[in-house]
Image (cartoon, rainbow, N blue to C red; front, side, top):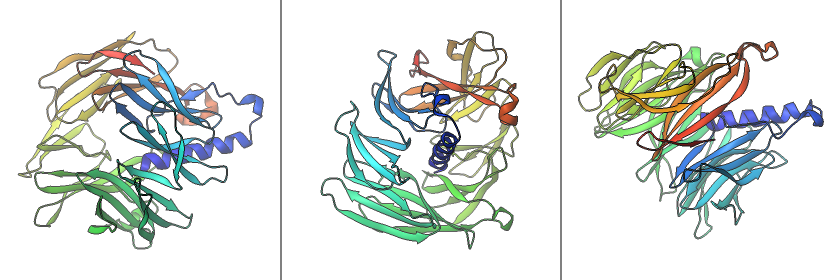
Length: 401
């Protein structure tokens, strides 16, 4: 949800910027592959969005076989969100009247068709789920049968309503009511035409200025875990509460002030960070036992927990980037140094950051550069772009985009 909101805001900001910029100053050659935009792994590569300063967005495919990138489709008003089912891509763009519209296109860039009006949320071989908002917090969720063309209105409500994820045959949504500060977790079988309420929580009065959302949900050892919270401050930091509903329907709080909106987990444990410190907790989802542990990092390193393995990226070395990995829930046990390593030439005047992600059968390592010396961009600095390196399951780098 937050990813789509950020993309929408960025497209709006870029559009405003064009109104106050001479056409000769705008160059479509300046492009960015932002960390928060969609990236999806396919059998032979990675699909991603490339955004340009003039508001254009290209949906691209990086080939792991050739190391080259091809453009599947470009939209002059941007692409907010995309999904793929088999060899067909579904994506949302904006019309000139700033309405969302959903198109389908084959992965080879052919057979572009308009499918619906709204924001795409979920798609499979039979169903397309999408949302609409009239600008007054009146939200609607529709489901379209792609085989018959039948469209069913699932729900209409006042407040924020958004899709979270699919687990098995169940789609999960959340609804936030600003007037009551209540946030509700909802579910719907993919074949059904009605949502069911799972549980309701209430945000704190001091958080009423922010929009509360449910960021993630997982099923583990017969229990349902979900996290709700708010993004706060100029740094857009997440403040979350992790909760559990067991098979008997009993609800309990697992942790408060969780700093990452994702629920990191393997088949047994959930891992979370406490209060912006490098102190972590391993929570056993069956017994409820909590084990605290710390991980050592420097200012040139960052930790990413991906299932049963944790990845520590290091961009502080001259001429190279490395990613170590070790057992999750430990301080470097079963350490495999330089699991991923590649050459990288840094600009001495820039500051860098990095992260490691898993997309399907591939790892992607993002290296982001920022110029804090240009005072025209304030304390956030000038975004100098992000380079994405793709590696296979053995850690071998296959190319970059």
